[in-house]
Image (cartoon, rainbow, N blue to C red; front, side, top):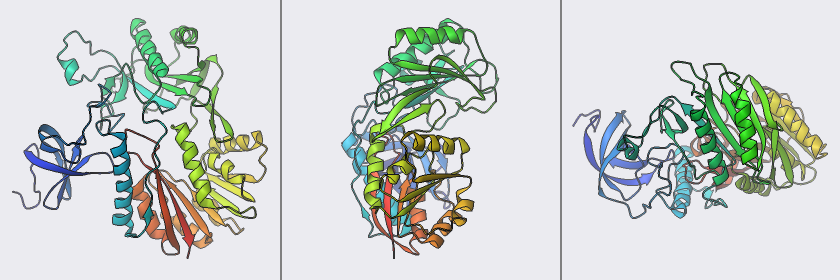
Length: 465
């Protein structure tokens, strides 16, 4: 065995899977060397082919089973093994929750060294399936076939509309149903797929840069069930209006159909131009007492019901008094700011995206909330320019966590309390370690926003020492 690498690439090793990692993969070990195994579960004894190796870890895929974990269940979706939309459909929801709590606990203990921090059991989602209010499907010139489909010679490979194969940007599994969205949304997916094929609306090629159809984005309100269909194309096309008319006639809950045109090579579902093809340019959804207008390119929490649980947890840990001031970092369209403003004297939101700040002001005006303000620009620059003392900082950074200079600005401001909302327990743990210079980490509350996936949201409360 190589001294530098305990495993060889393309070799097969019998391994016992002992844990799950953030990222969704099973964890096996050869002495202290970690092998991450896709779709493996604790209790599996598997023969694993090594597909990638590094000095500190390797990645492998299951070639065969010697013993299956007792935790395994049959995934309800027939596309599960090939599709990147879900990670843990082969694990019961109860066990998903247990492992997510454990992953948060392990991350905080291992990365921050805060071994005595209270990690509460994760708050379960109201629904384990059909919970997403937005799904983004990709068109492709070639269909990536599942093992079952490979055996059926009648299946055409020339068109796909679906989700990515895990770890790829150009391989698309063609779907006729997704269990993360409503049955009605899946019916729309099927109708658009059939219409595009029958009318020779060609998928856009990532390498050829030819073709029309790029993405199909379906949003559905949890509040009133209305649906927005966003068809993203590389150019205008007269048949899209016919498609829009047929969609509106067939599906009663569709209240908005837009065509975003992205003529650039960048494979994103945001256009330089948006054409309204039916209905209005937004749909409404509700979190707590607030009803929000959501346009095609707006950010909005994708699990509406669980977003309310998340925000209520933030309010609970904020323990605001009527005379206290709040900074809401990375405030987006102001959803958390509006919640906080109900109990605080003044809330200031910091957000780098100008359009989000404009939406935030509109939302505040709509509900006649006059004790909020929003500042557009880099959080780092604007925090240090604030002269007033702040009582509470709420921070909801992107997956990469907070920039070290943002952490330093918080430490200089010395708010009495911090509520940290995170979508990545590893970067959260890193930031907690930095904040520990002046703060006690009181409690971490995981919240399950994304059942069937490895993603975890957390709300952490910190108090000034």
